Image (cartoon, rainbow, N blue to C red; front, side, top):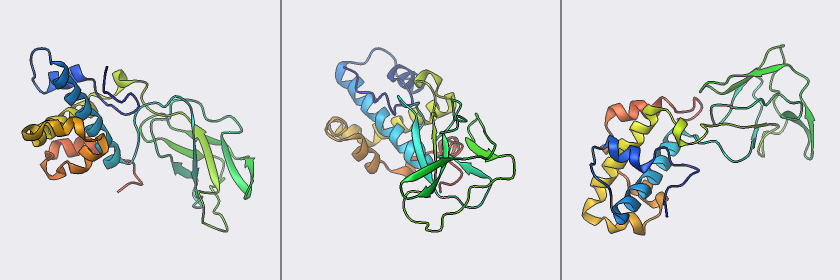
Length: 209
């Protein structure tokens, strides 16, 4: 049974081993370790970029605070479905009541993932800037399956898997005894080559870090 997390894994085991120059078929234990390391490396990249990459099963609703500007950068990218239906962009009028925006707005479908008013309207500020936000948008995002993950992101993932494998090779049972989160936490980021960091930073959300 595959250990890959379909919600997060950014590369397949076959692609990863090919990029790492591993020849021949892996036995069950080796394959399991590689897949767990892929999960951990993918999670690490999500943490470093402040976003998710793979398309979820259903649309998400994101809450945010208006800042008085005409644009907002959503948390995940790219936007892959039309979110312009009237109920998809709303503002809060009370703690329990939401209204559809009357402003005209557009969105980008590239990796910038920006929604923007085009008629002079703005994302108004709330009188009380507490809670989860006075605006909300419902949208679909992400790459539709690992086959559509960009190649440079796969290269970065495979590179980190290779470093993780070396880091844990003296204690390989740790790979199957620790969670992806724990493997990620124990990874030494300083071992990451600069060119891999450049690849990862390309996908960092503008508001994040």
